Length: 625
Image 1 (cartoon, helix red, strand yellow):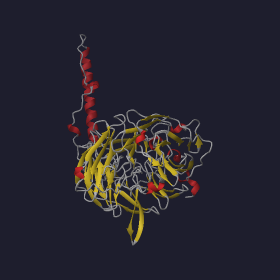
Image 2 (tube, one colour; image 1 turned 90 degrees about the horizontal axis):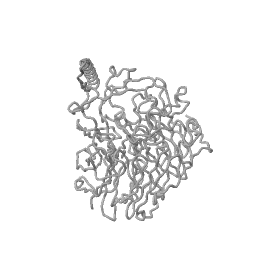
Image 3 (cartoon, one colour; image 1 turned 45 degrees about the vertical axis):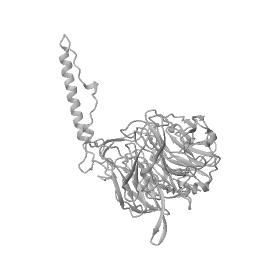
Image 4 (cartoon, helix red, strand yellow; image 1 turned 90 degrees about the vertical axis):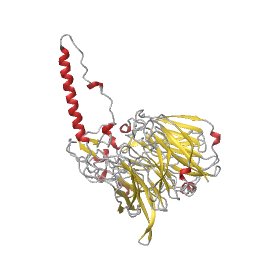
């Protein structure tokens, strides 16, 4: 593959710096924010400095590991709640990972969907300022999109926006510094207005997600989204003043048949990882479009895998596909991480990630060649079986389902025990495809799906449906008899439909009945060290994890708790109450020398992924040394 084959021209006359949406800023006691300058060296040393959490994964390698060591396996039960906040609307999606900037006091920055950025005193929870951005395309009230956090450098906070932009914001005041318009150019065409017409649709949880950009060597890098809307994915690098540097076409035209690349998906919506010594970024890539593969022959690179890109030039280095020519929405959405180990007497760098396919893939960082595919951490059944055409009844049960394996939930890595902690879904699904034509702003999927009934669903009392109650109104002309007969026929039809649905959703006997799992895996050998299955009546776990050097792992579950696990064995050490809703966020930790405490914070809520109550919570716990 040549350098030019996947890099797009970036017209200088495009409205790169014009903001399509509007911002609203509220300021409170901003004088609490200390004057602390964050350098690129601070970013490189974020994991080594326990007072900071400056990157989404706490280091460029995305390992979600903290060096603070006050909390141990012996005292984790002594963690106490410092405070809870309930920001945003109760239906918002709260899946992010906050940032911590050291100081007296330390300051926390976090996001919540849609496009809301908060600054608070991390000791007390005092609100310091808010910056709410209203995207030009609008955002769904019913299913607001997830927000996964900002990034920081110097005195500036950067966040992705739902209209494919980047906002640069003064971290002391919350006021805007500049905006980068990523929708100004699309497939080489300059937008007629501020956004290209094919990128304008209402944003919701199912259509987009706002991951933080990655900062490295004077560049901000971020991807695109909308794989279910027939877009062609791209991945951008811009400078620290918002000027475009390069754009990678994630569906390189010369490697796709005909014009299928134009709506081929491959969006780069989740967060990547960086190998800083070589200056390489590993970019997750989403499913191809449409989901059925008859209109897009071939392997459809770079979709459903990871793509390594040289940060300085944007040049392609390698790519690995979890599911070549994907039919099952097996986009490779989990953020990767980078680690190094001795192999054959040499120190070797590896990139590794859990996959929607239900395995952990580990590849050589230099070449992208597969080192190992792990033991399964969820069940497999008829995996990679092709769906039938327009016939769910004859479709085989397939595991994993389209939500995973692992969806966009960041794993955590403990270098002490060489353990990666992952979360997974474990539910059968049927697929059946149908033809669909591309229309801008409309779903471009072409797949019917149905999940197996969860154990215990039949015991849930469903409310009566008044449409089919068949109420009989007596009539002196005896027309009521006909109405009663028709009502009886409606009831019979309904019973037949319910029986058919029950047959279609009756789970296969091969399924163990557990909707999900949390597992510990050695990414070098692929060994499954431990696995905790989700109880049959509970929703599967979502969100990320955190490891400590003292052998403790923190991870949220869907029943409102954050669990502390023994990283090596998976034994539960403590349960911490977050809120009456799912805990979908990724925990972070830091040490505050002014208080002599180690803190742990986690976000959760939204009510959109679980059967629990609506609501949003930031819960912060601490332990004094």
